[in-house]
Structures are given as structure tokens and as C-alpha cells.
Length: 108
Image 1 (cartoon, one colour):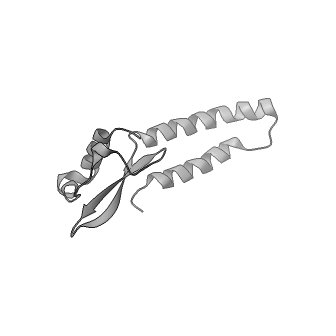
Image 2: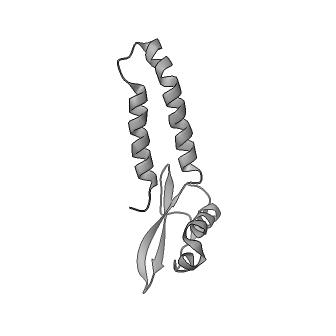
Image 3: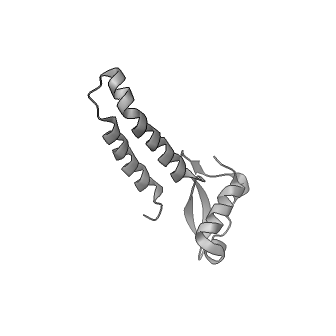
């Protein structure tokens, strides 16, 4: 997991002060209730104490994934030639990219 202070600032920046203030009892110092490679989840309450999960994306996740995919696409033809592979690694990287971009969109 990445630090709670960073997650707090990211959520504040994304939601704005008014919407962020609606998140009650979010405990960044205790850490996330779940964590993965591109983000983490915090438990909090909204409205009349309705428990919700708030996802917070790892800082610079999109830029890091874009760089990784760029490198794969650039090196794929060389790897393909060296290994005599029939796999189209550039197309595979494009497909991975579409999947990662979809996963990075937390609005859905």
C-alpha cells in the first residue's frame, strides 16, 4: 500500500473539499482495508452512517502503465525477431492497454 497521507490528498484533490468532507470516519492512519497494484480501498461512512468503500488510485498509475506499455510495444519487434515467435506482441500490448485503461476508470 502507499501512505495514507498520499491517499488522503489524492481523494481531497479529486473530490474537492465539500465532497471529501462528506466522507465520515475514514481512517487513513490505519491503512486501507484492501490494496492492489493500482489502488487501495478505505472504509468510511456517508449520509446517515451508510458504510461505503472508497477506492483511491495509486499516484501516477496511468503514467507508469503508459510507460510500461510503450516499452513493451517498442521492444516487442526485437523480442519477436530474436525468439522467432509467431505472437504479435504489439497487438497484445495494445489489448493489455485497453484493459488497464478500463481498470483505471473508477467512475464505473
